[in-house]
Image 1 (tube, rainbow, N blue to C red):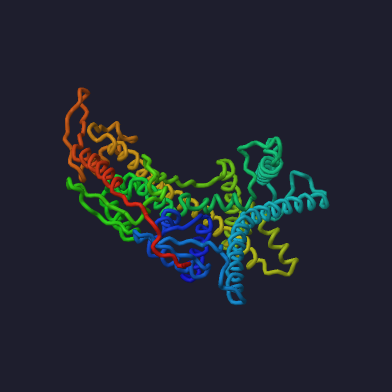
Image 2: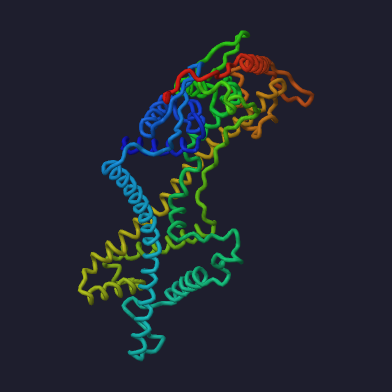
Length: 483
């Protein structure tokens, strides 16, 4: 598994490398891939060996990797070809089984519903046929647990709702075309069913990479310098968690904490900068790290999910019905609703099948268990989504609230934050890092003045300007592997 992941990572890395023009450094590739430096160095060395890369070293000691001969692999032959074929085959098989699993769930849901409706209609037809051939008056119609008015109302409701309202609804949206409504859903049934049961997956896929790219981009625009409050704004983490994570960034991207002449602690990432590189020297304000997207229960409409729930309810009802009479044979002989059960039982006897086994397992246990899971999985998922979205909302609000405080730390009130209920929590978090002075405004509200935060912000900006003035130019190339 680790070997497969390594090959996939290398393939993605090469795809990103092919888009670059001219020489690239470890810092450049970190800004593109968000991989740690040690990983990038290994991948660049591997790429240089496979694709006859060119290495250049500037007088500042920075190594530039380029591929002037293109990306034609040195490794050709049967072995590498078989390896690539195996990887592609494995990917296709994974996609096939994933799609087959989705189709199976849809078949189970719709298939059992159609089967139960077919059994009900066949039972009804058998009753009508028996009555016609026996010439019995309507008042005395009886069939082993015969057909009552309740049966007719149930069957009529099922037929009218599902076969007319759902399948033959004249108000249903047309197929995609010139007059197709923009908000109609034309996805295949199996995708809608799978969306209801399992959702649409992680909305913030590869978030660690996305977040790292935003933070690296910010560092490259800010001369490789960042303060802990800024990292909180970029990550949305609490102060203590942000401090631990920024240290991991120092390990992965060659950073180190240092103190300015005024005693302000900053984190410096010179390795992410390339002297004279346009991207490294570009300036810009603002925080580029995006906010996390909330989880969605499903992309289906409420009506679609409701219909799936009703179909599952029908399956659960019929499955429970057959399972009940299998477990209570005495009740089957006395109940007026046992007609469909006996109809299926006698039909299976006619087909030389084992009625009790088929009914008990095929029409009882399997549909009941499937129906319970069909509801249990979305219910548990909904609970989990609620908790995840609460955490995401907290992080996103922390980013915006801390950004406002960082930019204007001398007048902070509860109105500074989007959610007043979280204002006290955020103010306490900031206060644990920088103790504020507190005054009361004319309206009786507390106003927090973070003088220490303001001094830190100003000291950081002065230090950034000083570093900008002292930056070196790359100078001439002192080593070239092609010379």
